[in-house]
Image (cartoon, rainbow, N blue to C red):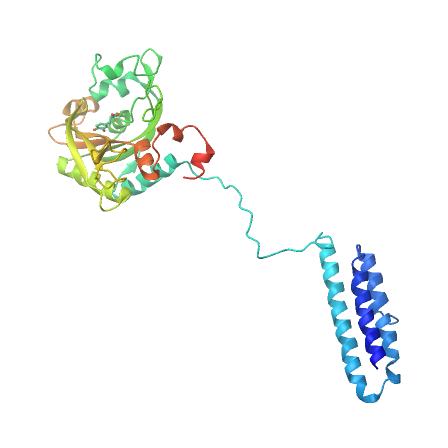
Length: 338
Ligand code: DAH
């Protein structure tokens, strides 16, 4: 019996080393016939079983069956591997971390605009749009901005033809909406704007704003403050404070600029807020009655507030970018990480 067991062991070793040269499915079939077939080596070994003492036969039988099952399994796997194109020696290590692929995503400015829209939509605002190429009339005149206003200077504005320019702000959308619609009007208008600025850390000749306008009976500056406060907290967190400073815009009276408490240093003072604890977001005010005159609204019946917001500025603050040019350079080393 000892010798038969040893033969079985030898057969096992032989089979496994023969396996290394099994490359094709016909090799596999030959292998199967040779070891597992009806006239195969295992069967012929078992034919010698009668020569073994009776009490030792079960042990030998079990060992032979075990080898059969083992080789059956090997044959099955080999065929599977051939089917899936794996070569011998290949194996799949499921514990390895996956290879990450670069996934495209929305530009940070787009994400900011979408969040601005979500917030104002929830406050009852609709979304309005206007053209990037504007007429003098909508960009300046109807916004009560006289001919001699510095913003109209050829050095500040991209003129495409006489009376036609790339809009310098989103405010002309106010006029376009009011021309078409009677109060109440409650819109925001996100979009691209253009000014003849030399690019530097805080200037880009094209940039984004979002305009806001609410006109109805009895709208007050208090409503404006309420809505801007709400926006600030939802965009940057509940700890944000808002302050309004007196300012001048031709299309609002009174006018203000508004700042948010610096979200980088928490208002203590840092480089981003130039040690003031505040960062400027844009301008706002009560719609000037002269503007209502351009769109045929009765200033005695209606009042309204308007505001702008610098989308690039908000994006830079959210993502901690200190140079606006990063937003327009299309450098994936920067944008990809935001
Ligand atoms: N259009 C102004 C600018 O580009 C920002 C602004 C100020 C918009 C006051 C407004 C406003 O709607 O009421 O600087």
